[in-house]
Length: 547
Ligand code: GLN
Image 1 (cartoon, helix red, strand yellow):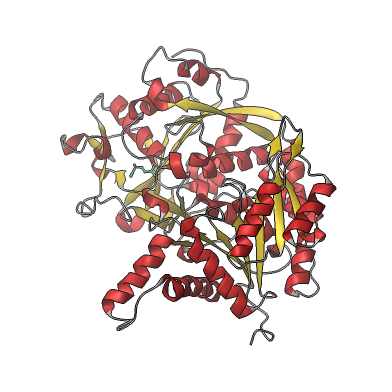
Image 2 (image 1 turned 90 degrees about the vertical axis):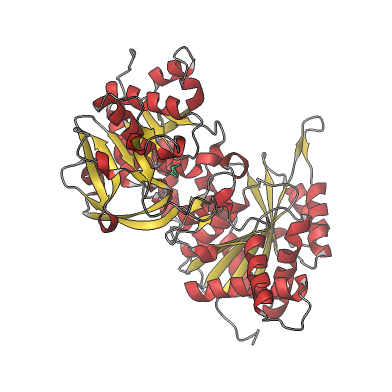
């Protein structure tokens, strides 16, 4: 069986030394190159933490929660995979220890293993292997990339590494590749990069039964050939398969760098893929655009997870892609929503210098009034404003307070116990019993009908679009005909829910209840982001000064 097997094939990516090495970007880049070689790719992230999914984790700890079309709440790496490979992934792309244990223990209670003792090997490892194979089968992919979260040596990661060992043993090393990414730290005093942590990390991987086929050696500086040779010698990996991964100016350089190191040819050699030819024209074009985009455009991001790029990563990537397409370079100005609540705060000085405002999604009432003030500023001064999910709700609240002259108006989320007649944004009637925090949001893709003669239509140029959601509250239709000057330009018709709102006679003041950032791609910016940046660019020379 092993020798006859052709597809699917599997590539495992593990990490050593420390976290945040860019394993996700590396996996996504390899996926992108294999797709550019004509293969159908699927990607799966195995996260060893105990949560069922990251839906309940704080973005400031774990980064953004990414959402797929089918409504999986996932790790932000899934976003990298989708952006780089331009595939639509699914629930099968995200596996956690929590999910695996829930599955095995549910079976145990049902009596599926009657008489048996349930153990990590084989029950947990079997469940992991099954998830991998099922995902490959369902997606009908040729090659599946599996990234194992965490770092070699983590106790909670061991069952996943063991499952990978068994899998490779069962299917053979031509069908299951192992790539290990490590860090070469730079010591200032010694003025050199060090290979010892890599050696120790590979030793630990081998102790768990896995010989890596590739080592992806990450460093902030150029790695001398002598060090790459040393890694090869100590880790028992042929020199050609030790790939240097030095820190790039843009993450989108990584596929091109990997290509230059002939990574696809090396994968083809190990996996016996015939006649492989990789077309990286699309990536080269993107890099040309990135390098040609020099005029800076300052966009204010009004949020509460400040300076933590990972908390807003898809938004930042969507803004960047739109900027590349418009020939400008994104300068994110981080604006702390809470501080805006004081009129004398320095944050107001920052706001006066930016060309557009984006208010991203969020939960809870910290910083809400500051966000409302930012929306008011954008409305009064004709500053382009894009409100996403919570940011759209803020637009509605600010506008309703202004038109109806009622400062009490708010969202039920921030004011659960007051009169429901104040709730411009409310909990959808009928959902009221589902307030437990995990897995109860409106998530995933829904259709949205676009009103002609609107900014939304100008952006999409389509009558129906499909966008991804992740929220609990909705615009309260009771207010729909009370807010003159607010255009409801996107509707989810089945439930008559407002999806897009925009302010009349404003260059671009748009709020969308969904998350367009999840569908933006580096080569194909999302229409709403593109329009937002285009208008912001036109407004380049205007500088608002009064409030
Ligand atoms: N907290 C808001 C809600 O649940 C918005 C959520 C979001 O921005 N993702 O509706």
